[in-house]
Image 1 (cartoon, helix red, strand yellow):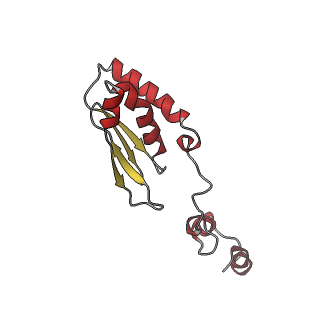
Image 2: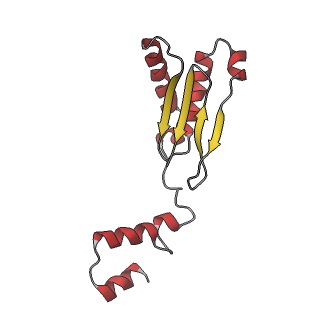
Length: 135
């Protein structure tokens, strides 16, 4: 039953019922439409500069901490993993001893269980481990 018709039949709805319908209604709920994630982007998905700036800060912190091994960076959230990717893009040539060494370094992507499917973990060998976790 459409929300308008439901209000007509039942009268005013509670906030809980309105939110339930807005998010989960079979016809027009946010989480039940095919394009539900098209309207939300995180800063790293808009432009890689966000990840590069955080990568620069991570290098500064790594130096201040006297280059601990491993140095872990976790990306927490429901994004696409774009932050972890741009951090790796920034850090790889600056941490490795040479460009050829940087090319040999690898990362492991473990598929997520969320919807839509997305990488949830990117692991880069010592000295940096960059991980992305999403719900």
